[in-house]
Every structure is written in structure tokens, then in C-alpha cells.
Amino acid sequence: MTTAGSTTDRADDRSRVEERPASAAPLLELRGITKRFGAVQALTDVDLVVPAGQVTALVGDNGAGKSVLIKCIAGIHHPDGGQIYWEGRPVHLRTPRDAAALGIETVYQDLALCDNLDIVQNMFLGREKTRYTLLDEENMELSARETLSSLSVTTVRSIRQPVASLSGGQRQAVAIARAVLWNSKLVIMDEPTAALGVAQTRMVLDLVRRLAQRGLGVIIISHNMNDVFEVADRIAILHLGHLVATGPISEFDRETVVDYMAFGRSERRKRNSEPTVAEQ
Image 1: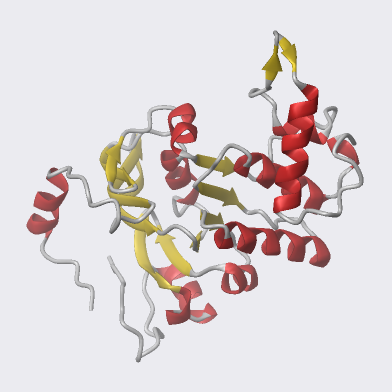
Image 2: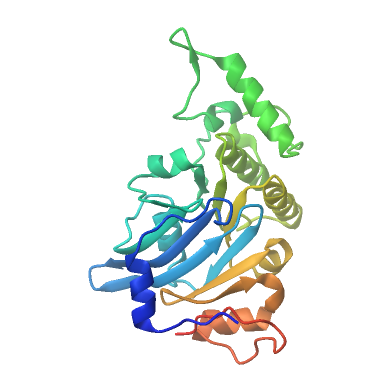
């Protein structure tokens, strides 16, 4: 059984920023992450472990702090307290470029794709390959084709077709392929199946599982409990900026997750599971 321990003990532990043995360390670990915006306390003392090769679902009601947390991981927001560990080493992510240098890529809900550019141009936007001061179109096209093929993205007619002509699922696939193109180790996805049809949702969820099978860590934010229970290996539940429960998805059911999201606690947690809950 995992216990929280005393407040003093936890504070003492977090005051010592120490490296962990790389072989025993998770891909990403957050310890005591706190973030406030003026009088608004967005995150309070959040501890989270994200292993490589697994899908971690981050869930919570609107305003729970999900977006703020992933933006701290992505280098957009700077935590006011706590420590981020990457492969056992303490790191400070001051900009998205710092996160990208470690192998952290984020696919936001708006996808940030340019409709007037083709697939190859979107995948290399801002990171274009050059040769003798000219764009190396052949090399970029080859890399884009190989990445899409490795992810089994086969529904795209041509990698030179404009993104504006793609379906919602195909656009999501291009955004994910762009994220893994740069030797990523952790891919964060914000509501990847929002507004998608059944067939397109299936394609995106299969793509998420393939990322984990390739050994990448995946964080997925979703309000769709069916998607969460189908694709996730682990779940972390936020409530009003507090991480109120986390553990293997097999220890939870849909009703229990909804309880934690709505009230920050649940009386329906499976009796025979080993609890890993940090109730507030």
C-alpha cells in the first residue's frame, strides 16, 4: 500500500533534488508541482509518474488543471514549486524548445496545422531541412513518408496533398506523425479524438497504441471514458488542481473515475485493488 506520509517528511524529501539511477527511473516524474496565476491556485503539490512504453490518461473536469499541467511539462508554464525529473535527472524546462530537446512533443487540440500547406511542409514547419542553403525537398519527403509508414498511416492519398483536404482523423494522424518525427520519447495529446467520427476515432486510438508499442511514453487528455479505458495503461485524475488518484487503469471503473472527477473522492474504489490514491 502506498501511503502519503507526513507533510514534514514530504517537504523534506522534495527539498533534496537528487538524481535517480537511470535504469530504475521512469521516463518522466513530477514531484510537488505547484502553479498559481495571481490569486488562482491552478496546481497544488502534484506528483505524477509517466513510464515509457505506456499510455497515461490525464482526466478531470473542466478547470481541474489538466492543460496547466501539460503546459508545465511542455515548457510553456514555469512551475512555482516542485521538481520535474526526466529519465531520473532533475530538469528545468524554461521554453518549449527545452522540452523538445529532451524529446517531449505536444499535440494540442487545435493541431496547429496550416491548411494551405501540404503534409510534408506541415511536418517540417519551422524545422525545414536544407542543403546548400536550399530546401532539401527530397529528404523531407522521404522522412515524412517513412514516419507515416512506420505508424501505419495508410489512408492519406498523397503526402503532397494540402492539409485542408484531409479528414479530421487524417489531420490528427499528421499532427502525431510530426510529433514523433523528431526522435520523441514522450508525446502529449490534448483531446485527440474530439469531434471525430467512429472510424476516425478508431484510427487515432490505434495510432496512440502503436506509439506506446514503439516504447514512447504517451500522455492523453480526454473526457471520453470509453476512449480512456480502451487505450490507457494508467490513469491520473485531477480535481481542482489536486491529483486525487492515480494507478493502473485496471484498478478503476468508469463510475469511480467520474466520482473522483466530480468530488475528489470515491467510495466505490474496487475493494480488492492496491490503492495508490492521494485523497485531499
